[in-house]
Structure formats: C-alpha cells, structure tokens
Image (tube, rainbow, N blue to C red; front, side):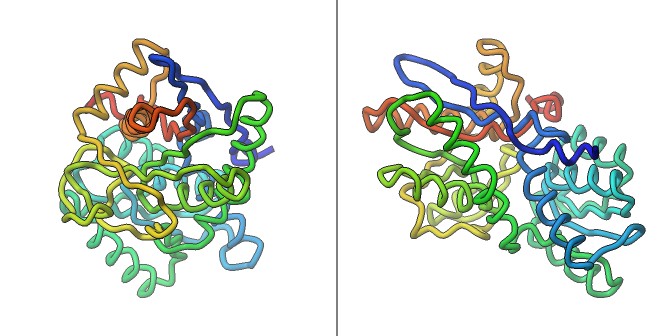
Amino acid sequence: MKLSYTVGNTPLIPIRFAGYTVWGKAEFMNPSGSVKDRMATHIINDAEKKGLIKRGDTLIEATSGNTGISFAMLAAERGYKMKIIMPSNMSEERKSMMRLYGAELIQVDEGDFDGAIQMRDDLAKAKGWFNCNQFHNPLNIEAHYENTGPEIKKQYNDLLLPNPDVFVSGTGTGGTIMGAGKYLRRSWADLKVVAVEPTESPVMSGGEPGLHGIQGIGDGSKFLVDLDFVDEVRTVETECAKAIARHLATRYGLLVGISAGSNVFASFQWLRDNNKTNAVTILCDRGSRYLSCL
C-alpha cells in the first residue's frame, strides 16, 4: 500500500470553551501533515488516470508551502521530479521538508504569489512540465466536495448532536471552503459558511493584499472562492492566530499551525457573536512546521 492511500478519514476533534464547541477536522494527521494532501492526491490520481503524466516526468507548482510539501511527497512516492515556486518569506521548516522529499525550490520575492504563479505557468509551458495549477483547478474543489465534506457530515451526524451552526474555513486557494462548504450546506440547509482571511491582507473584504504571517491563507486573491456563496468573511490578525495556535498546544495538546489558530479563533468569535453553540472548522496542518515563527 502506498502512503498516499491513507489520505483522509481524519478525526473530528472537539475544542470546548465557555459553553461553545468548535469541532476541528484534524487534517494535520494526513501523511504529509496537512489538508493539502487531499487536493494534491486528487490532482495526481486524475492526471495518472488520464495518462497526462508518467514516472520520470516533472511536475511544477506555486505554493506558500503545504501544497508543495504534499506534491513533493507524492512525487517521491510515485517517481516524479518536483519543482516548487514559492515566496521567500515562508517558514524554513516548510522549505526544509520540501527539499527532504527531493523537490527543487525556486524562491521569489516575499509575498509575491502573483510572481510565483506566473513563473510556474511560464516554466510549465516552456519546459513541457505538468502544471498542477492548484489556484485555478476545479479538481481542488472536487477533492473536498467528494471527500472532506462527506467525512465531516458522517462524523458529525454520528455524534447525534443538533446540526452545526457554521462551517468556518481559512481561504488560500479556496478549494476547502468551496468544496466541503457546498457539500455541507447541501446536507444542512441552515448552515452558515464563513471565510477567514488575515487582517493584514483583507482581499475578500474589499481591501488590498499585504504581507502577513498566517501562512497558507490570504495569498493575495480570492482564486476559487465564490463570494456569493460565502455568508460572511472574517479577518484575524497574525499575532492573534499565533497566540491561539500556542494556546491550542498548551491547553488542548493540539500542535497545529497558524492558520488553524485563525480558524479556531474565528469560529469561537462567530459562535459568541451569534449566540450559537457548534461550529465545524479545519485544523489545517501541523505546528511543527512553524516552530521558528510561533
């Protein structure tokens, strides 16, 4: 059995505070340590099925880190070469993980996701490399509609609780919120869907992109997010997200990343503001890849 065959079926973990409960989908338990394993595996499986790639081929992707780690793991497992384009201000732990999986990193200016995406597209075209294209690939949404959403529904329904009030998800590419969110709203008609982005880069809130430290979300554009589908956009400051990530480790034993901290904070904040009880969110990745910046 290949390691990538174990992607998914992560537990739903309760985080309780002041009478509210946030149910966190423990995506840090995926093989490479993040929710991005789902999308990366779905894209590679589809490309292999269609005969678009074969062993020895080169794959290329632009990333803030987690997607690159996921694709690098898959490339090592299945015999591909992996090229990663990423802004230079991402954590050193993330960069080291990609290199350990055998990927080649090409770094652009800090925060320059547009430049990373353009370089990826140009190199893929010039070299004939397979462009994974996470930011505009409908398979990104499909992975979460077909897998993440159904898992959450089954796990939550098994708890025999009233339906959750809200699904909260930080947005990088937007694949998770659009895929899982659409499936869950189809299942629970009254469910609210809330997107989270950094206060320092409030693009979906109508502001300008900016540098921030919540790696994995707020990549400078809404990409796959349909704002007509989302009920609300909430912003979280980088230092707040880091503080919550540290608190989750020391109080709950959950060593998760900074974007998970922002998701949990926004979830509790929404429950308090709306006098509701249960939220579902994503614990996106492991905190061990942010030790140098937490």
